[in-house]
Amino acid sequence: MSDVRDIVVSELAPAGVLRAAINLGNPVLAQGTAAAPSGVTVDIAGELGARLGVAVELLCFNAARESFEAMRQDRAGVCFLAIEPARAAEVAFTAPYLIIEGVFVVPSESRITSPADVDQAGVRVGVNEGSAYDLFLSRTLQRASLVRGPDGLGLFRGQGLDSGAGIRQVISGFAASNPGFRVIDEAFMQIRQAVGTLRTRRPETTRFLAAAVEDLKASGFIADALQRSGQDRDLVAPAEPPR
Image (cartoon, rainbow, N blue to C red; front, side, top):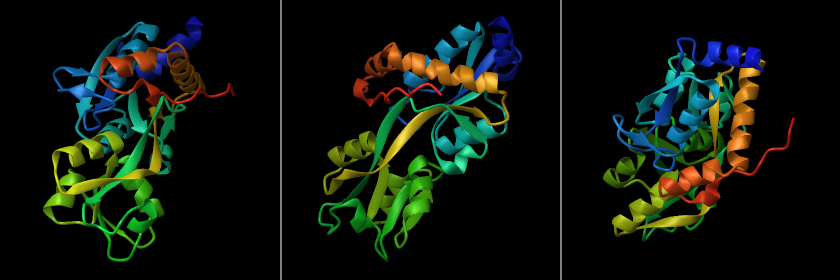
């Protein structure tokens, strides 16, 4: 077991420090500031460091695409990103530790009432560039077009777009605080949030991360971390069968 631990530490924390990329742009995953982050991903990073017997350094970013770049450039040992084919070529993912939903928001007077209605010619959708839902919609929309930027909801409102996309918690908060908009309740995607590391890591490292995630789900660690950060503990992903 010590030999496996030594392999994992040599890959994820070669200087005795596990660097974890934290996405502050997703309020379900992380809250606070770069100086004082908190949330389920912060707690998972701390637990991984404890299991390896190493210190943890949190590299905080404001968007998923920035976390992905830190991982791709090997500036972080682990990341917390949604599983997406566009990322999987370079990142090895565990099974998801939680699942959140992607939904649309539209102006109150819009004729759009379902996700299928969004995919029509001439419909423009604001998205956060490089987000899981940007990647998903880029693959699946046939007729609608995406308008990308650092703040997809800001583009949606500021440019008078037909729709905005995002995670349910953010979209619901936006609609609640901005009269004149409504949420399309039916989700257009399931966003499977997982722990990731470089695909070039050795099997011992990816197995360690996979086993840790399953243990943290089964023990209630993930649910408790979600609850402490004001999130719904029922977002925890189902257990994955042993491989």
